[in-house]
Image 1: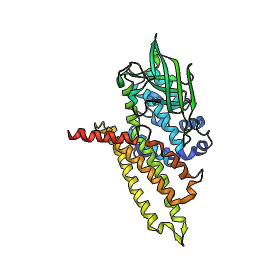
Image 2 (image 1 turned 180 degrees about the vertical axis):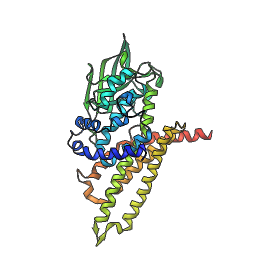
Image 3 (image 1 turned 45 degrees about the horizontal axis):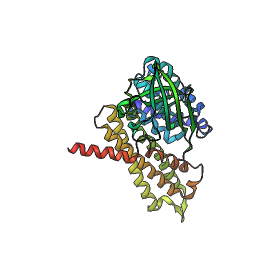
Image 4 (image 1 turned 90 degrees about the horizontal axis):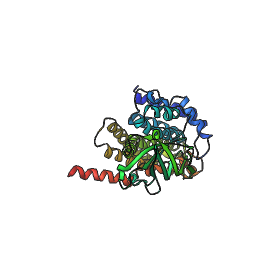
Length: 375
């Protein structure tokens, strides 16, 4: 068994074990008991290097992240979200942090004692991350941060935020720096947001929040590259997440079509049903192949990884929404009841077509690369 397969198998087993904790947590807020259990069961440590308090020899690969997120999403989107955001929030520190920062900030995250968050998006800087407006003004031995972050997963409950702010005006992507901001920092306030799916997500307001030299992450004005490096690692696994959700929906549709009787026979015997499922099953396999192809490209340092990742995220997210829609159609009205698996997945699958680069932006990335190659 490969490391990728072992991680996926372990993740699936752990997700099943902690399902009662996941289901009993506060809706739309961080489930601290769940995160602690995921650490105690060894899943979080398995995704972090030993130097950061984990159990692996090096950093997690994109392929391994995909395997874990697909397996988790197939079992529980709540568990998948908890693992994904905890790792996303901590990995900028893993990639660029000092030994002291790893000990102070990442080790508690790995142990499930602290909740992490990746804070990049602003009201006027979502897809265009280079337009960040949050100010980081020099203040003696550090900086003061002022501005707003929005649609931040794990906000406002996180204990540790990796925050990106502008240190050099009018410098575009070259004037952004990463900072580590404690959740209880004076001047930091937050509120939860309610979306169509009940994720822990919120808005943050910073008013002169003081960060000292030891909280600067990586090089001053080097934060955009760090943010993109982190997102490049995680972007293929967004596709893996939705592939897992779509696979769960397809499984449910196959089972239902086998059992549900209409006009004296199972509805799987009606070509209108069986051929729809055949079509989406084929598309889902294609999406999975694109996702892991992009992850492998990332891990080997392929120069065309941006195009491959864009294709994978675009096709996987659009396909997953279609698969879940077809599964609902096969079930009929029963799948629209609040609390039904497919009703849940239908709400969950919508957001990935927007975050970490909208479908429209992925098409733009692909198109630019196509014409660059032809020049």
